[in-house]
Structures are given as C-alpha cells and as structure tokens.
Length: 266
Image (cartoon, rainbow, N blue to C red; front, side):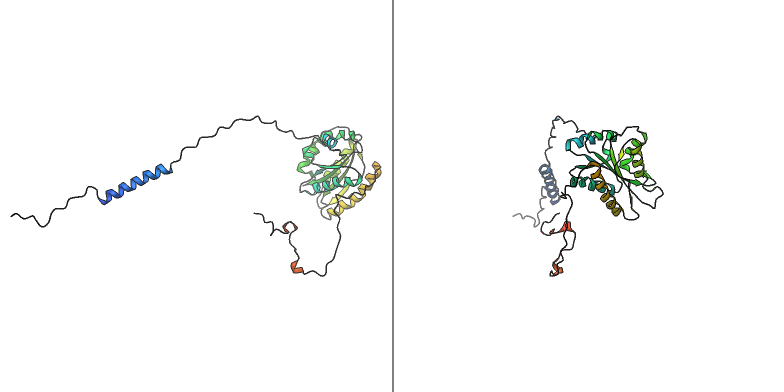
C-alpha cells in the first residue's frame, strides 16, 4: 500500500491580491472618466440684429427750452457741486413767478447759441460760476471760457446775471464770475442785476441767499411779472414741541434708515 506525503504542495492562485487591487483601481478610474465626461456644449450662434442708430445728444439748449416751454436757463461752473446746487435752486424759483427754468451744464451744450436766447420771450440766462485754483474756470466751464475769449458774437437782446462763487483768501477772488459778467456785457448782452459775490471763506450760503432775495424782485420789475404765490417747490415747515414723549422710543438716526428693520435691504 502506497502512502501520500503528509504535506502537499499548494497550488499558486491565478491572480494575487495586488493584481486584484490594481485591476479594481484601473476599472474604477475608467468608469469614473466615462461618468464624469461631459459632452461638449455647442456654441450658440447669435444672429446680428439691426442695431438702432445711436441717439444724438441734444446740444442745443435753445431748442430744449422751446420744446419744454422754459424761458430761464441757469448755467453753472462747478467743481465741488455747490454751483450746481445753487443753479438748481434758482431754476426752481422761477415757478413762483409764473416762469419755467432749467439748470444746464455749459460743457454739454453749444454755448455759441447764446445769441439765440432773444428768440424766446422774457428769456434770461443766469450764470453761477465758481473760480477754481488761481483764478481758473472749473473743468466743466473751460470750453465756455475759451469760447468767451475767442468769440465776437453779438449778444444783443440777451438778458443775463451772474453769481460768482469763490474764496477771498485767494489772490484771484471770484475771477471767473467777474470775467463772465464783464465779457457778456462787452458782447452786447444786458445785465438785469448786479454781479453777486459769494465768499466761501465767510458764509457762502448766506451770500447766495442775500443776493437771491434781491435778485428776484429786480427780475420781476424788469419783466413786469409778479410772484404767483405758488411755493409748491419750496418746502414748508412747522415747529411743534412735544414734552410728553418718551425719548427712549424716539428714533434719532438717519432719516433714510427709518423703519429699515421692517424693510431690510441686502
């Protein structure tokens, strides 16, 4: 009787553990690549539409005044915004006298049309001109200043007045306003009220209000009009003292943020 050996040689497996691991890893990467690959999105084709002709900016303040029924134009030369603010206030004042005004940036209009202002009945040009630096015009009034120096236009029939904004501590105090006032007269325009001088070193607002309160009566006398009493553009205030209110419940913050906790904005 033959006997088998106690230990039989074990057969080697076809794939080792390392081979199975590498195979699984490679298969997983291939599957991931197929799953994550996106089809290239086609680039949309845009059809060219007929573009509208670019709108031309209205450079004629005369035509704009005629279209809107205005007879007072207030030009401003402003570097910090004060002259522009004064111009807007003067243009709104006109409503109280049955007239209509508009504030205008001389940089946006053809100032050579100033001679056509006489085409509008009871028309008036007001200039709120600030002086910048050492007697220079503001940036937005530079072209107007250059035109005044070069032009020989005849401004007969053009009514005007000037309020100058400056600072007395500078050598050339209100030089721009004074030049505009003098030059317009040399070209034949008619000054309907004296040159106003605003001093920022003192109280510019007070100077403007004082000049304005004297200017409008003179304008009414010149054009033969009276105040209509329509102060719709002027805010009216009434003072009331409340002594029975708990101040802990009174909102004292910025008016623009009143009730902001109710209507929150991002």
